[in-house]
Image 1 (cartoon, rainbow, N blue to C red):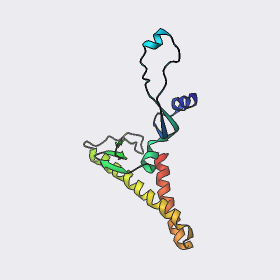
Image 2 (tube, one colour):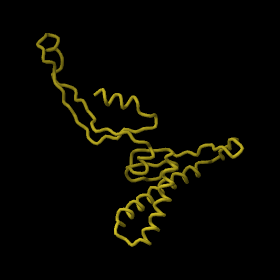
Image 3 (cartoon, one colour):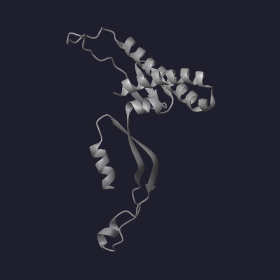
Image 4 (cartoon, rainbow, N blue to C red):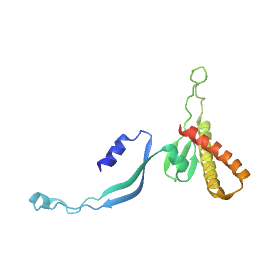
Length: 159
């Protein structure tokens, strides 16, 4: 529909479309009885339609998607969606750009491992927070502090 076409056109560059359902329509042949229509093949080409599409960022997929595996300097979600992790050049306090060290593949892999571990910690914290609804106040304060620290890291990553 034009609504979906507008959503795709207006989506940011770094966005992935996630669909919840997929429909396949076999199609139909032309209903006219013209000679040119009778020459056409009677087998219609199937068309696939996506509905219930949401657009999400790569970090949403990494933090809330499926299982994550680290392969070299890449994160692979659910065994097929691959995200390459690279180390960007950073600015120091003087406004000068620091150069990357040669052979930075190891540090890229370290960042990939850090993202995977953040995901594990986020899963644990969310589960503990949901389950801890009836715990005593002192333990809840400790858990709230831990949750806040993990969520602050996620906010910083998404900012």
